[in-house]
Length: 189
Image 1 (cartoon, rainbow, N blue to C red):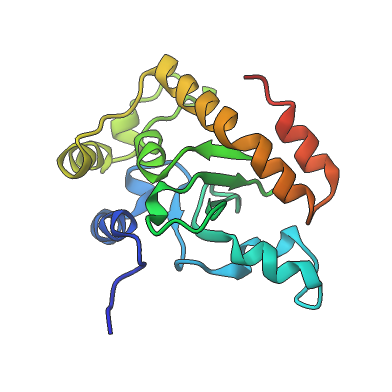
Image 2: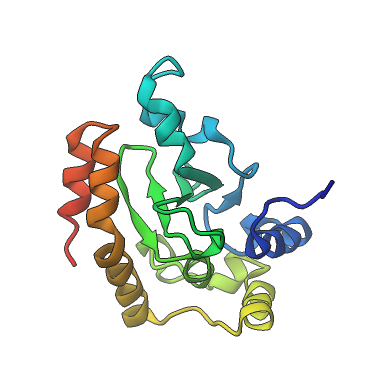
């Protein structure tokens, strides 16, 4: 029996880093959850008696808080591929917003250490997030990746939305109200 955090090697590497440095030290609002904790997306559907609930939950693998306010990142199993790290990462906001955030885990990992929030405009990110430089070294060492610049960040988001949002919206629309789906499809690309 394995003591691994998850069946996803990339997430296991992040969990090891996270255990050493703590998420608050490298990414604003990001916090790993218990892997595949279905309770974290329960607010998106009715209770367990809802017949669509099982199908909905079977296709989502929640793994992290995306913000300090309860938003969630989940892998969306849009097919039955074996490599779970290659699944799109979807965002479920605590205020009902939803979108495709990254095309896969490695793209999400690139996005974690950046913060374009106006609240941090005049702040030193390395001072706010003391393990940020260690995370950047970890990202490079394990995956040969660096965070995107602002233009590439936008391009990554647009590519993920263009590749997966229509299919995700169709799937999600079967289980939820139309408002969340309509809002997602109105995100300018």
